[in-house]
Amino acid sequence: MTHTTLHAKESQPAMAPDSKNRSLYRIAMTALMIGTSAVLAGCGTNKDNMSTGAIPDDYRTRHPITLNEVEHTLDIPIASGDRSLSNGVQDSIGGFATDYLSTSSGSIQIMLPHGSANAGAAANVRAQIRKVLTTKGVKANRIIETSYQASATGDAAPVRLSYVAITAVTNQCGEWPEDLQNNTFSNKNYHNFGCATQSNLAAQIANPMDLVTPRAMAPIDATRRSTVIGLYREGSDTSTE
Image (cartoon, rainbow, N blue to C red; front, top):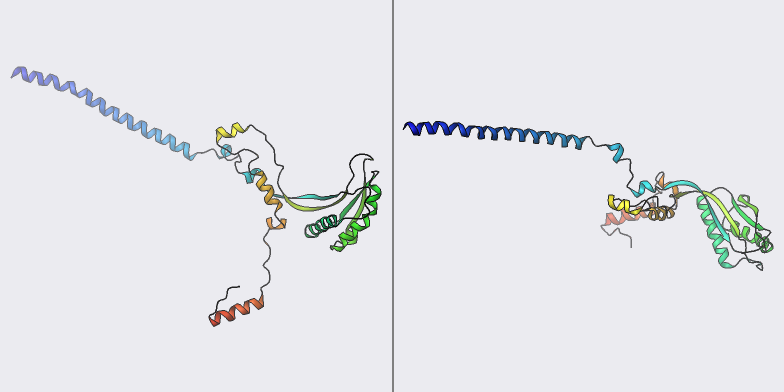
C-alpha cells in the first residue's frame, strides 16, 4: 500500500504541466486570432480612395462626349472642263445646306481655288452653288465667298463649303499610351477601349442640346384625344391601327 500510494503521488504532479500548457496555448491562440481579425477589419474599413479611385477604368470617363465648336466642311471636286454642277453634286450641296440650317445660325463660306488649273471652272459654278444653297433655305446674307491659293499643278483643287457649329464629339481615338500587356496582368480594359463606340454615339446625336437638357413636351393632339375618349366611353378598342 505504501508503494502504491507513493507512486500515485509521484505521477499526479507530472500531468499538471501539460494541462497548464494547453490552457496557455489556447489563450494565446485566441488572443492572436482576435488581434488578426482587428487588423484585417481596420484594413477593410480604411481603404485608400485617393489612390484606387483616381485611376479611371470606365471608357465613358476616358472618352467622354462633350460639346465643342467644330468646323464642318464639304469639298466639291471641280474638273477644269466643268461648266455646271452634276445632279449628284447638287444633292450633296443640298444635304450640306440642310445640316447647316439644323445646327448653325452663323455664316457659311464658299472657298474658291485660285491659281489652279480648274480655277476658271470653279468660278463658273460659283453662282450655281449659291443658288442651290438659297433654294434650300440658306439666307443670301449668310453666304460668304472667299478664295485660297492652290497649286498650279497636281490634283484639281476643290471648292470648299464650311460652317462652324456646336457639335457632340469625343477625344481622338487610336491612342495607345501603354503596352497592352500591362492591362492584361491587371485585368483592366485598354486605353482605347470604347472610344469608337463613343464616337459613333456622338455622331448619331442630331441635337447636341439633348445632352444638356431635355426638350419641352410637344402639344397634345386634341382631335386624337377626343377620338380615344369617345371610343373608351363606348367600350371600343382605343388602339391605333
